[in-house]
Image (cartoon, rainbow, N blue to C red):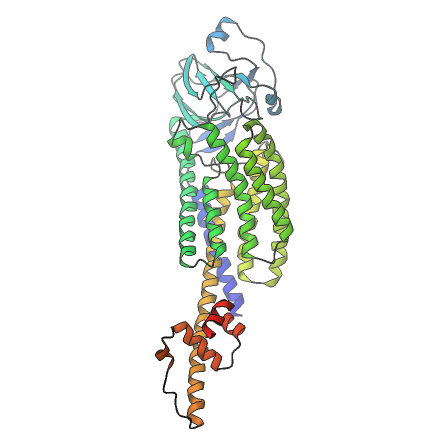
Length: 485
């Protein structure tokens, strides 16, 4: 009955935490998001309600693959006809121009929020150049790759506004694909961007705090290796797909950031598997885990030496293997639930969420559509490129409860051990008194024995075996043998 009550309390606390996080992530007031209908090269927004809504647009632009055009080129007619292109078609082109026309209300201030296409962009709104992120170019030598999230404000004086985006990609397999953006009033777009930044800081700050907390626990007790590995998992997930680098350092080195992003990606999945392997030593097959660790190590090394175009092509191979590992881990954790331990239940809930969001990230990063227009299981959340760190926030709480349960169990056992030591000492002195034997002239204190050594002495006199003492006092056999000698 007591065990069932404890499990009920734990699950209730977990559900309360889930509700609180849901309120933070999804119930914070922000404008509604609506997907715009796909129109080839033009969208009409004059009849739409912008009072508390922002609109998301991703297709279709007029695409001029293999050309970098300016507004002046279009005005002079010095352009070729546009091509209808799907996302996969862009892989054949390293640079392109994308053009669209928006019908808007003149004199109204609008804002566009967008992540630049990977991996260089120059954008024109009307006839004005608004921004250049990196340097899109028709040659690899002069191309400067970079990615950033920007917000552009403009007030059209005419009913039709032309948006032109030059993009180039000489460093990644995806090609010079077209941009995606949100459009709305200035206030609504600012609220949307602020919400995304708030989520980024919340997730990153929470995971870094969890990293420092669990690292401190390991420093206090260095025998708890799972705590150290879990701390490293929190650190890696805080760095995974982090949007803070371009926010604080717009002129960062893209090649260094790219390699670091992929290394973190490979290490994160491997470290999470290692964490479960150490936390539950008999749960996962050792040979399978060694093969996976070796594969992750090989990908890390290849990331350091191969060109970025090849590295980006290899990602789907690693993600496919990781997807299989996720399924295997979930099956094994599900089988472990038969032991009906609260620790296993919490671990399963946390890992199941991380695995589910991990599968979503694998599908999303490889642009695999299963349901509707968005990639992955449910797309991104709150503007986050990767959703696994969000799930890790839940897992941090789950594992915090696991640690609390383990420490409470350890403390209970230590109290019981001290009680047994005290009872052993009392029984030994009582036996001496009943046999009218003379009490020893020397005591353990006379030999300078430590408190732990005295505990071992009384338990030995009480007839306990060395393995039994080691288990009772949480000591290694080597330590018990040393004390005994």
